[in-house]
View (cartoon, helix red, strand yellow):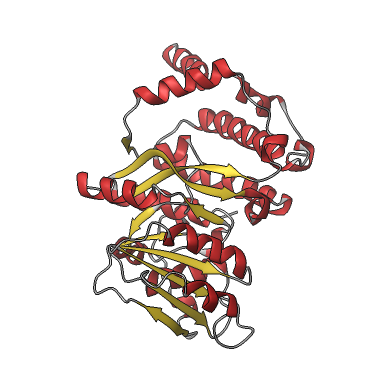
Length: 345
């Protein structure tokens, strides 16, 4: 089990693979100083990667550059599919790098940060897409507010998605839509939000400052598969001023997303239990609350993963206890009980 004080301590994760170089194979319309770099860490899935690039290219402006960092050491030169694709988008600023040797997922995310030239960076995986309002909403938020990070809402899409996830009643949907319309479009995120909504904060659509990512040492692969969640929890804890833009600006193609395999889901579950204990100490969450809330939240996440993927919840959580099922009780009710019990002492 990891020591509690490991997570928010500096570690130079960029140095782990500093001896492996990345060769620049292509650069079109190099910008002098792009504001935003959309970086795509790629590995083998060329056609899917090009779909991700296209989702950016159709809304490309002078403020952005696109870089692809290919971690597939096999083959020589550019994929022919990329060469054919880029001819159709002569105005976009795009670079293609290839690592001389495979360095792995998190290391390639860090390489994306190192090679980016923009003040702001967003890592777009080759199995995700940006919607056509992403760049405009991002620039609107950057220009309007003093921000250190911006998170966006996203949709999960896939041919089987609607079959596996039960449709909610139109009444519930309308009520949620009404509440959402009353909320601010862009809202400040308190750092403790990363405790209460744990596991929800990844790279998809997220904009962060390159200089801050370098200062934190990048993504740590020791924390896989929650490395991104740990990184952004640390980022917001240290730099504050993180905002959530409630617009849906991104799409996750869940059917090809490796984070939704049974192996990754169960490993995520185990890593979250340890990291939540650490966050509860940082934000001074009472131990009894953390124990109940964490188990309940993991149970809810397991139910959601089971509904999305079709995997049995008993495979994700082999032993479901009464404490797990406490997630059905509203958190506000649990807090009220704890206040009552503590108040009687």
